[in-house]
Image (cartoon, rainbow, N blue to C red; front, side, top):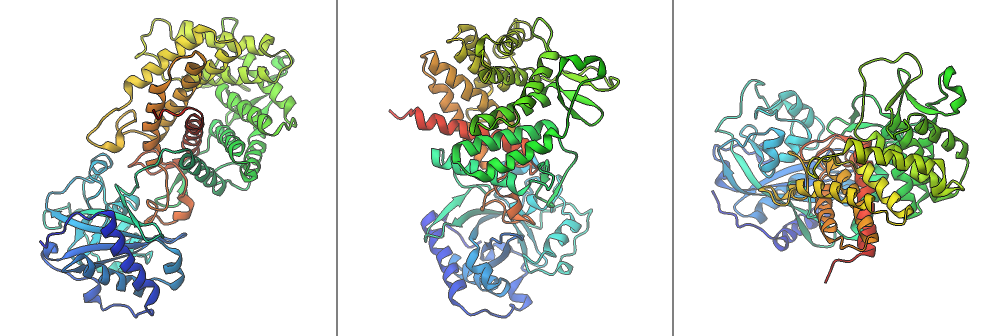
Length: 577
């Protein structure tokens, strides 16, 4: 193989500049002959190989490859092929990504989600017609199954989209044929142009995240704009989007619709951008269509609840709806839903026993199914009640505040009784409620102590090092963006409590910054949406994980909220010596 030195950003900027100059100054060429565009050779390592991708907003990227004695020569070949494929407006508006093949190996790496996550910079070489598929293409278009076998239908569907300019009929692969030693696996290094004459490296499709107030706000705004694009005509939000085929999966979820509205009001609060306010209000109007009065025998209780299909009212669904309404009131002082808030709050107290314990479900009809309890519903209810007490004339002397304290007391003194810190549930909603209770009680120590125990449990399970550095700051294997974000919401709350208690919160801030780096890698941006069928519809969304592609609205909500919370900490509490 022709040796290729490991390139740096300066070299990549020079090569990308070469490609950009050719694309913007040359006249449009005719299509290259088949032999030159798709050279076939028994030994792909004979020449330097590069892949050049040009982003397109609403379609999969244009992708070409070039081979030559040097990287410059290979880039020239790929650029001329790209010039033959791309429209002038695509060239002027798109951004370039360059993948340089450093080495070839014959051992198949295993292309399951978990396996490929550790070796994401490997591609796949098809000897006929001499086609190099990047790992991002294999993953985002499901071209290969978890056993390392090509999916012919998926590959042909992808090629038929014209991004590659490869006629699908040229690729004949047997569905049952496993990956064999003959197709080599290229090890590639990736760079993206910055439109200022420079370039930056991508690792597994992502740039190195910046953890600064501006970067966190930009990421949150991008998340909010994702939600705007996925708001449906009735005001609700498309729940579970799979960008690999540009469609939604499964049914919606009213709890997460409420949480989405809440996060949009948070974003409006930080930006003043009324698009987020209007979208959140539309989402609330859609959600409140599911508010129902009680069964006839409970009419005197005077409550309403958010009722799902089947006549089930979930404690958490009504609590989150109340939290969204309260956030709207906080950021607008608009009291149009004041009576609605009162009736939803009454449902929460109706579901509460004298000892503070909550019933998790209420049925408008006959109760169906086995008993159900959620880890998070009680904490959501406590947080909603304590926040509702803030707008009540009696404040912390009100029955609402008393109900919140009793709810927190049951969780701390019954559910969590006798558990060591590493056995406690990572209940971010409870910790957020404890933060507010701690503030409103003048720093009652029991709230600090229990919150600290939950936080210590979270810190004890956070990944501090890993062979895969992108996993640092996370939980579980493989880690998820939302499990990381919710624990960050908890750490933001304990950071607030700790400051109030006049204790150094530095360990929590360090943990939050590590987590945020992973969360940002899970967000779709210009660099990692190139090969999707509709890149524009994915931008800003937070996917489930680095190798899991679906985007649910609650993934966006929790990541958005936690990044905004960390931003506030960075703005007000600098750890720099």
